[in-house]
Image (cartoon, rainbow, N blue to C red; front, side):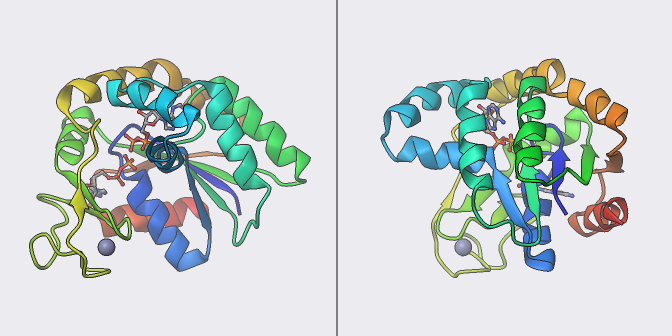
Length: 213
Ligand code: ADP
Ligand code: ADP
Ligand code: ZN
């Protein structure tokens, strides 16, 4: 099964994608993670995207489509979870073509609905284990021992450079202008399911499981 988790920054896409990976052996394709990896590599592409990401703007379609194309060539496991991709109509069209070329299809698009006040809280409290990638939150998901990762035991917590209020304002605007039209696009194709993203992590996981049935 191939699915998209669609939603604004901080909606909980990465958190829920990681659960689906553990529970269903699916493969998470996060263009945000791929771009963050590229920028630490010091490549020309990495340097080009760093400033755009910090400002909260969208990286060019050409770059992200190229990243996804590379990953789609690999093993599909229990299916792909597209997390943070597509973000524009051009990316959505490209994804449709790439899947068709593989003889695969998109089974479901899950739209995670979360209001702006909650998004601001989620983004400003977000941090991640720099060693294993586990996600945390100052208020909603604290590690058992402060600063120590529950999963791997390392003390390498880090915060994203773009998780500040100013960049977040730009990211939300980009979402409403360029990404939210995808809701209508997938509704018209018949595979859109909206879920309430406001509950606890467990509750949202249950909503998503229902949407995937
Ligand atoms: P969030 O967790 O806030 O939804 P991501 O980690 O998905 O953010 O993305 C972080 C940044 O990476 C975005 O603000 C944007 O600059 C860039 N980015 C990620 N995915 C895409 C994409 N599909 N198209 C364009 N830019 C992207
Ligand atoms: P996205 O990938 O959509 O940008 P994340 O999955 O990174 O969002 O979640 C943003 C922040 O909110 C993280 O700190 C995460 O721990 C927290 N979070 C995710 N889902 C929930 C939830 N249902 N309730 C409370 N906090 C959540
Ligand atoms: Zn860890």
